[in-house]
Image (cartoon, rainbow over all chains, first blue to last red; front, side, top):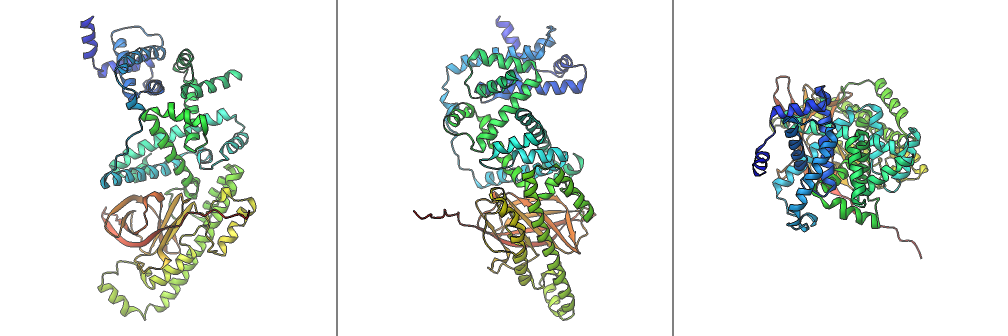
Length: 212
Length: 355
């Protein structure tokens, strides 16, 4: 048992193990990549909903464990369900550790540390870059999606619920379908903004405008 | 149908930590097995963050949200990002170039294509946004017309005076100002006039909150260049190279509590560059930000580069915007500096109603 634990601890995700995991998600590599991202996102949500401060780390740990099982030849019928089971087990493990720690730390307000001039400058530049990327990404959405997302999210205190009802009626959608469309479009924008930010750090935003 | 709404309701309760463990596990298992359910879960989460960021949650629900949902750092970060997103989209909604999808489009676009894209936009927008955008476009049109007319008049005047001012031009050349276009002539007057016509124009005021009659009246008010202060969501300032910092209000930018975006139009004459960069700094030498890869717009021989900025980058002080151009050989050259001052408008006072 101790030997098994040691072996588990020493195991690290290799390229081959990852490829095997992807292949078991879908035979088409592109689809597999999409399914992998989706699974990871579900795991992050799971740990986030349970109050974890590092949900992405736990999600990766679940994926490591699942990949190891798959590499060892375990026949997994449904990787999503299987991963959920592993996530629950890991959560139980973390609970045991957490019981010995104070939860106050996680619930306490974040201390306000005065940022120095350089940090402020860096934050301001980052914010500026994000805003610029968002503008570019908005302009790259289809006209219908752009009009939709601007109308859905722009600031309008007090009347937003009514305005969304009108928007749903105009598009002949239910409020849930409207919300779903907004969420999808926002996610699309988020992907674009992230690519733009990382790209603009290296080659400037101009290349992103033309290449994306 | 009930089942569908039941699912959304369960998502809300799950996110607020109100679901019993068994129900939460069922919900999670369901969305792990079904991507569509997961997408709906995310949409509910997005909506809740959005509602909180807009301060739509009050009382117990708000307290519950803060106590449970905001208990973890990643979620607090989501909320901050959402606030930023709402601010940015709101600012972008006032930028016709973004709404039209013509951001950084070729600068020499014809009037016909401009109108075509505008009419496409109108076909897509819901009624409320259409009204707002129509007003903004009218205001922008009036502003642009005044801008072009003003420069045309100034150019004609300058051409007449050109011969007489040769000597003065030579003096300026000795002071190293010749790299700047002749727009510098009469710079103070020009800037003053420009500011009256265009600078800090506030007609894009809080149109959404105004009654319909007031919204309809907005273009007329803008046309009369009323100096009446209205809370502005977007503040524009047109600048000429080397306008002196003479203490008058010609090159000052007044930011109000409702200001959501600042637009700077930097005018210049020469245009032989592939792209433009702008460096914004304080007169004390502190660098505030840099924008790269900008394109110039051309109106009757007068070129301008426009930047849309978050008002949060400004404080109450003097600034210099340096416009640089990238030559065909890849060399960055300074075209000109633009001085302006940023002021904060006093907070609105609530009118006293007689008892």
